[in-house]
View 1 (cartoon, each protein chain N blue to C red):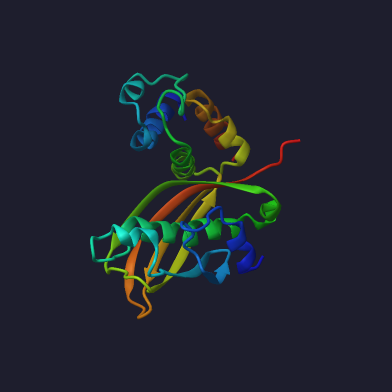
View 2: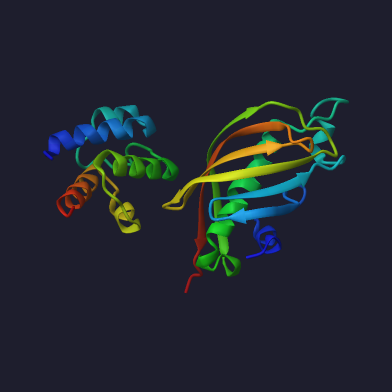
Length: 150
Length: 84
């Protein structure tokens, strides 16, 4: 499965797709990146005259790369490319260390803790272009391939 | 393992994940994990994994599907332990 196939399979689109590239992937984890464009819709309101990427958006970016993209790869043997995928975020606990401003590129590194009974739990870290830790935490979700109804 | 001991052990495992305190206080063998205790699907997986560790057994997808209430959980744990 290629990085392009994974990104095409993600159930998101602009203005809520926060994955540009998947750089490394394996059974145990995945690395991906996203560059926050200067005209992202949330910068108009967060904050007034002082655009900073909201923590919830950083969390979403971590979940789309670290949890959902990895999940699609892990489900590759279940015909995920030809089926619909059902995704539900079930819990996250994230600590934040540095702000992310417009035009910044972030890299997300995800490490699988387990994927059993459709639940994927990952340790996820986000770094900025200077390799400084932006945020890190644990994200879990339920992921499954919807079988076509006969 | 005796059933009452097993239920007590099970209660310790599920307590962190329950949403309905009253249903938990009045827990019986017919208490349903989802309908009565209002446990979500992700936490049900946590319970399954905790049961595996606590009883040193390995559970499969079909066990998970059957494990809807306290009685079913006890039966599955007992049968896994006996077949070890």
